[in-house]
Image 1: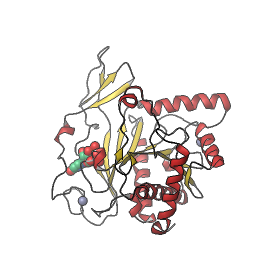
Image 2: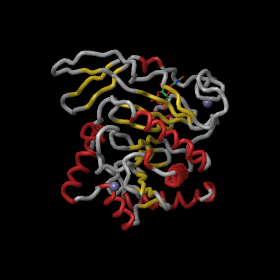
Image 3: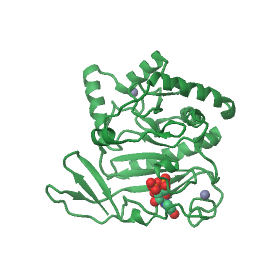
Image 4: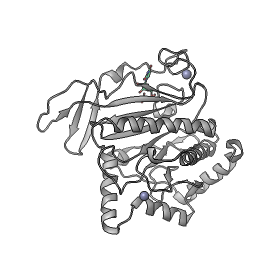
Length: 321
Ligand code: UDP
Ligand code: ZN
Ligand code: ZN
């Protein structure tokens, strides 16, 4: 287990042979169901250590190197089991109060990792669907607590810092204000949060969920705001799953400020990257996307946002909205 540095991109690669030991889609056994080895009974949602962690507080220290640098894979990987019910397909099938419980675990994990001086960045994410390669179907999210500031959020921070210096305002707040003004890409909003398909979306049905209030961490949200967040998340996932009348494979990540330092120009938010562009067509990150990180968007974002908005309308009764 170690971190390897790519001096050309500034990325740290998390290298571990542990990961290869994972059981691939075990049949007839689920490690996250109630009563399994690590879960026990009497819970609605719980955090487990990841058994095949790529980062660990016990990682062996390693030496540097010059052009080919490496570093200790210090950190923490965990699994957030979101419900005891194995067959729930997605978070929109859970009640509002239940989703709030899941978000409270996100708050707990954030607070816990903040207290470790060596953790710099926390990614809380969720992979869903065979198409993304999930190994276990029991509803779960994950987190990686990392000892470095990863490339993409670092890039966002650099740009947001520049914007802040130049205009004295939060770039994210300005984006949210503009999206609310334009309305045409907004898919859902409530008293505390808004979900929109960004003007600059990469994925055909990409959705970003923002708190209206300028905060850096989920731990800053009140119970009422957490409810609004759960509501916006249910509505967004409900819309994605209704869009093609089938479950939408996706990944999402919660972007918070780094856990160390002051980041007044950053604004916590969640980004969902859905993988389908049509009912049975996947959008691949292929040549251009993988090599240059630049995406081609093969339709009109405003039209796709409209489709998502209608899909969202259609699930409101089911979600009790
Ligand atoms: N896992 C675990 N305990 C187990 C089986 C699996 O902690 O008994 C972890 C596993 O290491 C993996 C995660 O649960 O990281 C399953 O996540 P998923 O399939 O969503 O994504 P992956 O991490 O495999 O890409
Ligand atoms: Zn299960
Ligand atoms: Zn802001």
